[in-house]
Amino acid sequence: MPGNAHTRHHPQGSIGFNLGAIMLVVAMLGLGGAYLIDAAGRADRHPTAGDDTQTTLTRTLGGKDLEIPQAWFRYDEQRVEGFAKQIDLRLQLPLGARGKLEAIDITLLPRSRVRPSASLLDGVYLHQFLPEQIAGPPGLVGKPLRADDGYEDEIVWYDALAADPFVAKCSKPVVETEASQCLRTVYLGEGIAAVYAFPVAVLENWRQFDPEVKARLGKIGAL
Image 1 (cartoon, rainbow, N blue to C red):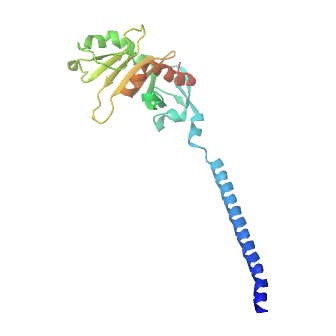
Image 2 (image 1 turned 45 degrees about the vertical axis):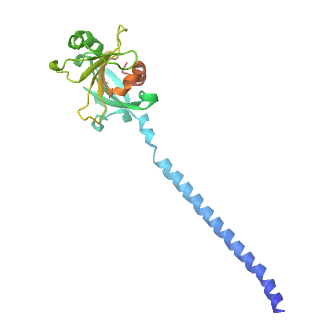
Image 3 (image 1 turned 30 degrees about the vertical axis):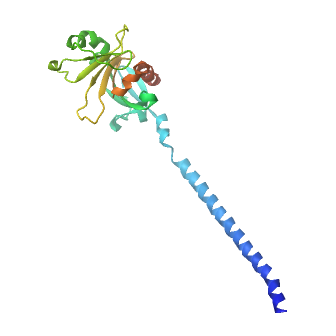
């Protein structure tokens, strides 16, 4: 009967459709797998952004050879090997509020070119202090400097209890929307000094400042 014939042919059409659908899914899975393999291959050929921190350059400063990761250099033109009169670095360290990363600019110089901030405290700053004292980070004393001596809008923050005190001089920014910046100079290893420049917010963690910075500088041989 015609109706029965039609019923017999319908399952064959369904089977053919199902087989075609399965083959399409298999083909798509194969294409996806090939894409993933190709993507993995491309990833292997292109190093991640952090890989360059493992590549170091040898710079000689103050009679010492320093092994410095390329990613630490502040300026591209200093990413060469050989002797240097000055090395400019930039590190992101967790010294901001609640461990926020802050940019710490570090300039390495021969000792003969700078004077430590702790020495300047007694030799220079003490004679330029205004009478008032400014409230600030716990453990630090804030003293504004006399404007008529070329220190307009500058404040010296220091630890008054230490024999070798933490000392930083901070200046108000030229643009009001920017943060105040501070400078601190220290002697490191034999023949090398460092000038640190950092946002004033870092003073909240002033006790952690030297240990954090020296932990990095020790790795390159600057201590």
